[in-house]
Length: 407
Image (cartoon, rainbow, N blue to C red; front, side, top):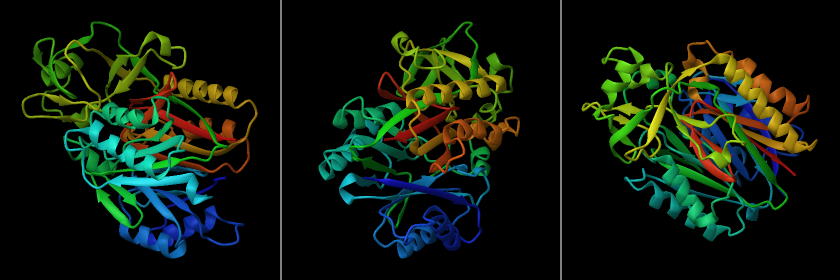
């Protein structure tokens, strides 16, 4: 049976930071040795030192994780360059397994991730929950093809938690395409790869809900008239970037990152799933712009697809989070969570130009779920999040996603 422990810190020294996290997480335990450590780190740490020191302190532990735009722990949000958070897990080795990919998907996210899933299942056929942390950028896009690779091996209803690894906000603002992110696998630091953790504790169950809180402008949709996978060349027969900037009334000289706080794209979900979701839509954002005015999205955008522009609405964000938490509490039916994994889009943090009270949003999630108790909680600011709808994992961005584990 797996046991969960969590902690976070922003100590500058990387060795001391991981030591403090393990000491605080495992306070009261007979020693600091554990079996699995999930690490989320902002870009300011020496990643090799983090992993080496973690193995020195806990020699038998496997390690997985990724970089991020900030962390969320039991004590709230930290988006500093030295933010660090962990989930330490104790339990039988046969109740989890790890695998990784050390390079990008090479334009085949389905095949690359399917092979990871095959490897994971060969290690442990009983896996019933998967944590998937791929690189952001275009490394594993379109991301739902990658998720399909997992489902092809474990079945379409396998619960999937996690999200896209992320970089610092400074790097994000400075580029027109999402910059490199890093993943952690035991003592290796991967660049542009992916890690996958499978859990098979038969006593664990999970609840997942997400909320985006964006206002969808349901006027005339933008129809994709020319595209290639997740690259949109044209909307309504005109260059995609030209259409977007003209519609939004912003200069064509804007970068993709300058548009992120302003607007995203909404796609309708199947009608049968709408009762589960706060909205009829899932939100995605532009991940990059090319010289020919084409744009990069994280999802597949076939010809004929209709997308709607959106605008942020802070009241809807708070209302959406409250509704999400109510659904989770209703489904828990009084049961105490053993761990919570939170994935928030980096755009709901500091990148929102401080218009969003991120600490208050987090408190709206933690206070009702924890109810004053010490619940292990690990969250990170990501490049995109997963949400279970109709028992199947989907992808969206600019959302808060909570994956609550209970017995």
